[in-house]
Amino acid sequence: MNIRPSAAIRQNYNEIADMCRNTSEPVFLTKNGEGDLVVMDIETYNRREKMLKLREELLSVEEDRIHGSKGYSINEVTKMMQDAVKGAINNGKSK
Image (cartoon, rainbow, N blue to C red; front, side, top):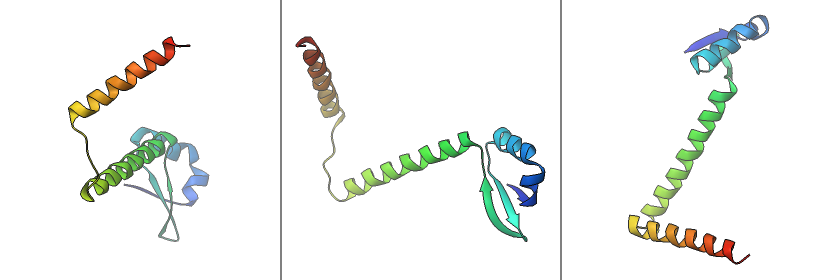
């Protein structure tokens, strides 16, 4: 865990930015000895956001399953996808 005083961001911006990029880890900034801000590079931020969104979607699906939502077998999904592809091909031919 990288912890720096908040003054370090003004004095050593490039060093902190490089640290974030090289480690793909956030840097925690403190003010008066207390946690204040978290700084991270944009790629790490985007990756974490995507992971959180995926986890939210998986949790939602699992909650639906627990509450009795109908699931589909592999064969049913395969058939639905084949039908969708056929439908797309047929719509393309009629134009």
